[in-house]
Each structure stands twice: as structure tokens, then as C-alpha cells.
Length: 135
Image 1: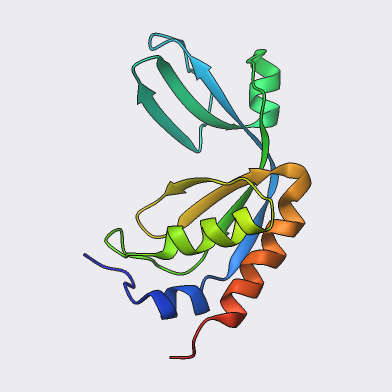
Image 2 (image 1 turned 90 degrees about the vertical axis):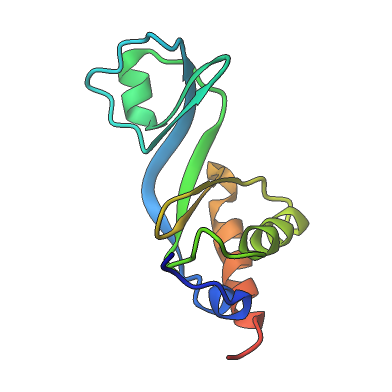
């Protein structure tokens, strides 16, 4: 498996970046017509299909949502087997009063935080990286 596993290096090299736009989590029936939608992520749950979409796409289709998020990507190539990264940034964000929904990609972790708390989340993540023990 590729990617970094050393927690100290993961924290030091997180390089959090705010992606442009606003994103929402929508729940649709399993048999919903998703033609024309370009979700960042989809999750099949017993209750329905969850899509993470740009807000404009959800609005254009009249899809309901109740959480508007900013999308932050951690640009360190973290291994899917790495231990402690999610716990570390989740604890720091919780301490700062920022909720966080995480989606792990093969190369990077993607954090969805309340749109109005995006700058607070970025500053918290940057502080966490700066405080990480040097290699």
C-alpha cells in the first residue's frame, strides 16, 4: 500500500487547502435518477443514496439538504492504513468548535466543515501542522 504512515510526518505535511465552492450532502432513494449530477462522493446506505454535491447542482435539481460545507483537502499522501491522522485533526477541530465530516480518498483526506467555519478550520489545521514534532 502506498502513502505515508508516520503520524509525525503526516501532520507536518498536511498542507490543508480550501477548495472553491460550497458543497452539500443529499439523500436520495436508491433508484433516483442521478443523470447529469457529478457527485464528489456517493455512499450507499440502507436508508438511501448519499451524494456529496456542489451546492449549485443540488439547487438546480431541487434536491434538499440541511448542511452547507466547505471542502478542505489535506495534500499529504496518507496511507489508508495510517493510524492517528484522522483522530489528530478531528480532536483539534473539535477543540476549536468545528464539526468535520471526513472522506478518505486513495491519496488524500477530504474534510467537509461548516461553510461559516472554513477559515477557523484552516487556521486550526495549519497550527496543528506547525506544532507537529519535526522529522
